[in-house]
Amino acid sequence: MRLASISVDLDSLPHYCRIHGLPESLLDARARSLVHAVAVPRFRELLDTLGAPGTFFAIGEDLEADTIASSGMRAAHEAGIEVASHSHSHDYALTRRGPAAILEDLRRADAAILAATGVRPEGFRAPGYTLNADLYAATVELGYRYGSSAFPATPYYAAKAAVMGALSLMGRPSRSVLDTPRVLLAPRVPYRPDPARPYRRGTGSVLELPMAVTPALRFPFIGTFATTLPLRTLRGAWRSCRRDAFFNFELHGVDVLDATDGIPGELVRQQRDLRVGATRKLERLREIFGWLKSECDVVTLRDAAGRLSATL
Image (cartoon, rainbow, N blue to C red; front, side):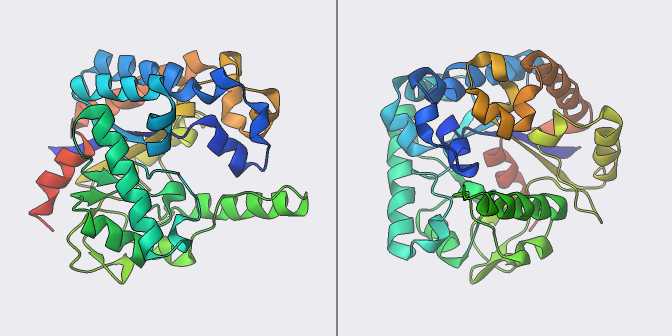
């Protein structure tokens, strides 16, 4: 039976303000904690109902600043959910900060996760999915078992470039970073990277587990699309990946939130998937998780890396 993993990036709402060029002052204290206070319990209930493990990618500074976040990750870890690193500051320009600053950021994230859960993380996902040689070298030095940052999705890349360009013209530049086009040529299946060019195959010690994209068109199968596109489209994308030995389904905390959860209207207008009701999103995700459970052995990313590493 092939493998599948379900992972959730716990980007809090301030990061979405940064993406859309909105002031973080829009958010009150409750809105800043929504992902950990509301989305994490919803994901846990969904995973528990299906009997599927998951991987949460936590941001170190959120765990340090928010007791709801740190206690939630402790409880998730004790329930068998893997807590992995999504960096300390979730700086979209992390790859541009130089080797020493990158390493320090990841070390701080490790310390925050260790303090919250009692164990060091074994996996890493880059902010904005952006990877380079300096960042890969830091994951090697810190002894991670795997990374899951490569996202070679052509439609996503084109849409991101268009949105960033439009925001710049509006005088509201995004703080997101557009990755090198070389990411579009990265393998779409698990691989060992070339440490100098981590979007190419090589002999790197830290295994890379890319997000799921379809063959040929490289259409992304991630939470934003899974909760908003017609079910027929998703079924076609799922079927096109059936020959893959591993399916990496990546989501975000906002994928189970909606406008009624207390998100400012300015952000809802920019983040269109927030206009879809949370109940509808959860129903859709429950169905997709069922597809994975029926055809795959659903495991954490840590366990997937352990089982795949010997074959690569």
